[in-house]
Length: 324
Ligand code: PBG
Ligand code: ZN
Image (cartoon, rainbow, N blue to C red; front, side, top):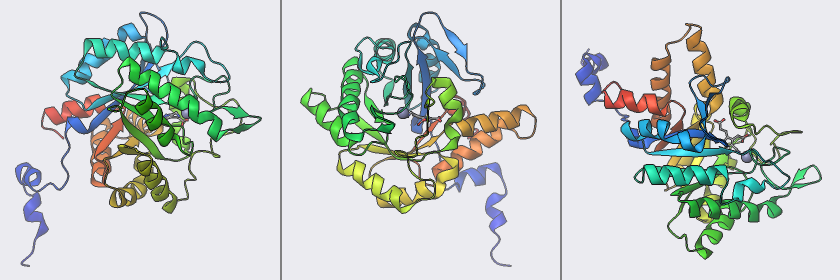
């Protein structure tokens, strides 16, 4: 035998030198749930280890994000007041706007991404304005634009629309530009599937739809070519980066999208992926650290430039220690 692949697997040092996939904390994004109130840090039962913070308590977790040198944090707001049109989402004194201002004041160097959607803010839990039982695409666009402008005004570096309305990126870009926020970037959830893996998030954010599902706006899990179409559409409308979501179950989609576009591509390893790993680990069936690392490596290998994950803080720590 002349060729023996095992030669390059012999020592940790040789394996490290010949690695095709390398990760760094700067590629990680950590999602943070912020609820209204004061002096609150509360557990999220379906997502062990994740918490909801009131804006004043945010520095506790952001300090760790900064210390671990992660790329950005992604904010989700959970308001007290919900109504038909999600008005708390574009309130300049809303919970996410307060959170953004606090974060920017305490940690000016930390990149803040704000999730733009309506489901946490609407009384019906859908991601847009209802017309009867349907989500009215075009009526929703002006609200999304208003939300994004309000978040950018509060100091968000990047806005991330997760609503899956057609034309959302164009509507947001136009509104940001008219309001002088030409440097606010858009990281669009261009390829977001109607997935059962969002369950724990909906508990965390109180954003489950009160009737029906999101299949008329989020993508059909059976479709791949449509993902390319969605990605190209959002990029043509001005998306600076795009997200493919969920993560692990959609690596084929991630790879296909990555090969077709020339903007940074993020993969969102969603709440259900996190909770499955936590649950199996808590039973002693899988090693949490090893599966979290292997999942991140797999997502990066499939083509992600950016990984949005609830394990971001731990993963960054492993990277800084030279363990990942
Ligand atoms: C809101 C939103 C959701 C997620 C991100 N933004 C939930 C949904 O669409 O129902 C899911 C994130 C996760 O599961 O971790 N539109
Ligand atoms: Zn939504």
